[in-house]
Amino acid sequence: MSTVPHDPQQDVLVERTGRTGRITLNRPHALNSLTHAMLETVRAALDAWADDDAVDNVLLTGAGPRGLCAGADIRALHDDARLGGAGGRAFFRVEYPLNELISRYPKPYVALMDGLTMGGGVGLSAHAAVRVVTERSAVAMPETRIGLVPDVGGSRLLARAPGELGTHLALTAATMTAGDALHCGFADHYVPSSALPGLVAALADGGGGGVVEPFAAPAPESELAAQRDWIDHCYGADTVEEILERLAATGLPAAKEAAEQLLGKSPTMLKVTLAALRRARELPTLAATLDQEYRISCAALDHPDLVEGIRAQVVDKDRNPRWRPAALAGVSPADVERFFAAPPGGDLGLAGTRAG
Image (cartoon, rainbow, N blue to C red; front, side, top):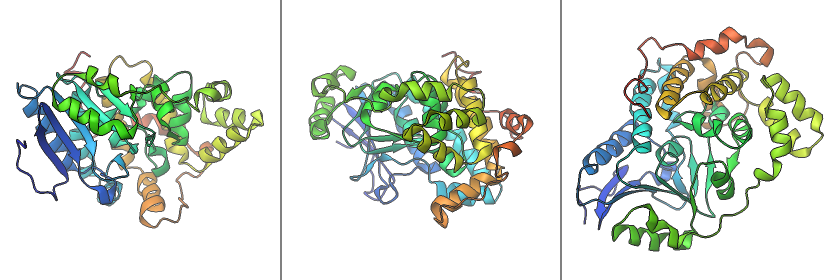
């Protein structure tokens, strides 16, 4: 039974089904991409259910056949950044605390990462207590494709992936299969999509994350894990320039393809991404990582490569971004350091309020 009346056209459907508090991202025409209002709706539902004795668990799903969520509404982010970025900063100030809340939610929070799960969709799912992927899952932090840097706590997940797999994924914006997501720490269980209705029904009957296990199947092999040797060697370098040199020197087709991917990305955002991941390895908590990401994201709103990257990929779709500067040599250490400075409007300050 529904506890919150809703119109089928709402962008987030909030309902209670049995013992489950269910949140459905409901913009299938836009791959369930996130708006500011959607984040506020999700937050309100989680706050309401935290102390509701009628709710045993929370379930996050996406409407439509294509996936959970493709991330933030980047066209809106593009338009806002052109006007100064105030809306983008407000969006991040809602999104990042929500990501942190999910990581410590007092009830089992189950995320079905079925289909496309990218960017902001990872933020709503990969910090959950129970993270489920299927044979249809395609998981990615694609921010460098659009002149941005992995956020929503993604830099922490990537930094903690085995070896240098996370560095490879962050810089190239490559997509993970279900097996890759499990291997890299973005998911916990592999459940065939045909078993999802049974899982949803079992959750509604009550219980926590253990409900998932009877529906889980053996995890598929990770394609990335098999490439650890060259990935760890190449991405273990201290600079993006040296990473490119090592990729070229391997003579491997996969490494050559990775180098080509890097050469198409914003030189500035590549260097900032590498610095962010290296620093994230030393940060003690998700909250501290989100604070760092907020600084970076605010700085990115003021950098021309974000607007240009979204223009090239989404607005004009010419796939020909004109980065400024256009080469890695034009990005100085000082240019990178500016992304880690406190923004004019002040820090997010999550780490100051949370110990874990």
